[in-house]
Each structure stands twice: as C-alpha cells, then as structure tokens.
Image (cartoon, rainbow, N blue to C red; front, side, top):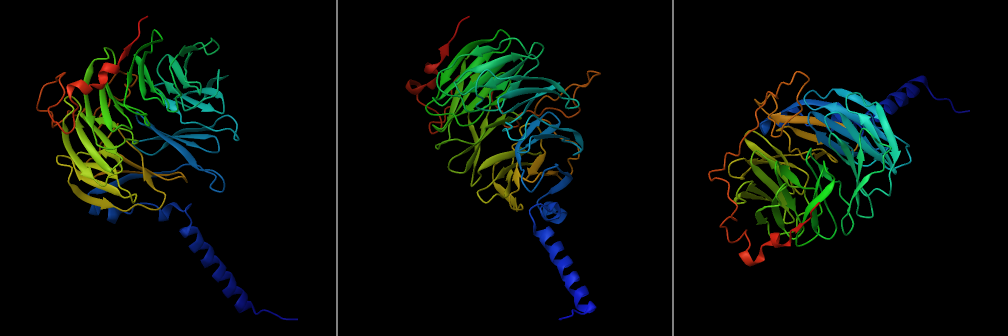
Length: 428
C-alpha cells in the first residue's frame, strides 16, 4: 500500500487552490479582469463613475438586450430576467423574472410609467417604478421584434407586416392595426404623437399615435436595416442605399438627404443638433441636423457610441473605444477594452456605457464632467422640476433652417433624383 505524506497532501491542496484562483480570474465571468482600470482610462481623459454586475446564471444565460431610456438602463437576459439600473449611480432600481424561461424575451421598451416586453407571443406590461405586473395578454399574431410604448398604447410588430396597437388602460380590447406592405423585422418607435416603422421593401411609415391612422410613407432606395433617430419633429432614416433621409413627422415635408457612399446598417444618432451615422466603409459621418451638410467624417469607426463635452466616441473594427475631436473628427486616442466588452449606443447623454454578455456594466465619462450632460428631454419629477443639465445646441449650426438641400454636390442628389417624390400621403 502506497502512503502519501501529509506534506505532499498540503502541497497538492495549495496547488489546487492556486489553480482555482487563477482559473477564476481568467474566466470571462470574473469582473475584476474585465474592468477598465483607472490608469488606462485617465490616459485618454476618462474616469469610471461606477460599475455594476447584473445577476446572470453564467453557466447557461447571457444578457441579450440592453436598452437606455431616460435615467434607466434595462438589461434583459436569455433566462427571462429583467434588471433595471439607475444610469447615474449604477444602483439597482428593480429586477424581476418575466414569463417562461424557455420562451424568447425580446427587446423591452419603456415610457415614463411602464415597461413593455414580449415573452414568446405574450405581451407583458410592467409598472416602471417597481417592476410589478400590470397585465399580460396573448398577441394577435407572431411577433417579429420588440414593442414600442407611449403613454396610451403598446405597439407590437407582427410577422405579417402589421403593427398592433393595444390600449394600456384597456388591455382586453381588440387592438388597432396599422397596415403596411412587406415584412417588418425591426421594433417600431413611438412618441406621444406618432409611431414609426420600416419594412424590408425600403418603406418608412409614420402613423398618428392618437387617432390611430397611417399618415404617410416614404420609399428609400433600399432596405432599412436599423431604427431611425429623431430630434422632434424630424426623423432621420438611414437605408442600405447609403443615404440618410430627414423627414418632418407631421407634415411629411422634405428636408434633405445625405449620401455616405456606402450601405448603412448602424443606427443613426441625433444629438445636440447633429446626426451621426456610420457607413459600411467604417466611416463615421457628422451631419448638421438642420441643413444636411457634412461637418466632418472619421475613418475606421464602425459605430457611434456617445457625444462628450470635448470628444465624440465610437467603436472601431477591433472593438476599441475611439476618441475623436468633437469639432474636427480627428482621431485623438483609443482605449483597449476586454474581450466581449462592447459599448452601448447612447443618444441621451455624454455617458459611455460598456457592457458584456455576462452582465458587467461600466459607466465612464470625461474627467471633470461629474454631472451628466443630457441631449434629450428627461423625465420631469413629481414636483414638475426640469432636468438640471441643459440641452445643448449644435455648435456648428451657422445657418438658419432651410427647406432647400445643401449645395454639396458630392453628398446631395440632383433635383431630378429627389427621393421625396416617393412620399405616399394617407387620408383619414
């Protein structure tokens, strides 16, 4: 019989512990190894405001959807959980499990008071303050994407190309249907006055969200692969024909179109009087939101991330955070990120949110900007106070608004090619 000495047993146990610690640190589930450290952040003029870890069963689940709305960040997991964070502090506002685990949880939508989600073919409405279930009902068709939400209705995209509108206060009533041709694969977008959606045939629709009717549609030159941006009352639609289209939501009046020279699949962002869009050539364009004129373009930027006080932030092909001069678009610096770490597109504030599939969230901002700069109207509190951070104006806007297209021959179409001739008007 072979005996093992106590000394060798202790040495083996110690070796196992060290191996376990090393494995844990090297594991993608170890948040410490995935954080942007302070030294690297400060070298590019950034600092970390906070970080948080979403509850995820790392053995089998991932975070599938991240959604920013007002001062909330919503994380929906493949395990059917919805976790809500305060974007200024990183604190958990509430968390809940939704529906059945074996059914797909689509991208959630939020308004001031409610949160809407689709689990399988079940439409679920939650109280936005505490996650309490308000109601649940079966959709009248197979869902194609996540919902949209305003103060009165939940809008659901169905595979047959229809948009179903369900009353929040009367969920058992039959829905109203917006009819459109083709198939719809993207979530609709909704405001207090309109609901918009696009389809696989290149049509962009604008419907009245109060009287529930289609107002008009615009035909682009190709499919629309991403949701639009907005600075009320204008919508900015990017299509795979390489153009960004500016449309007035209430009058359908043409504003301008801008050519990027390559197909667009990345979501455009409208903030501080500018429109940012990344084209298929990994080129980020900054466009004046009023005139449609080019402000600058930056090479090797795959998508817009955030607009800071001094820099525009993007992501490059290698997943690095790219820092561009806000005035010129010139490359200033880059920040390496951990594997699987990606930035969220933020059109609401100057904050940079870095996330990964395992639930780690990091919030960065420029050194010296301890208070967020908001570019879109935030929620009004119960006393009626307005947000403390002002909404910035476009510093590049030197010309008054005009209905005429910009005179940049390379970026603007000839008159005979005006795509807005394809507007379809709808009556009552």
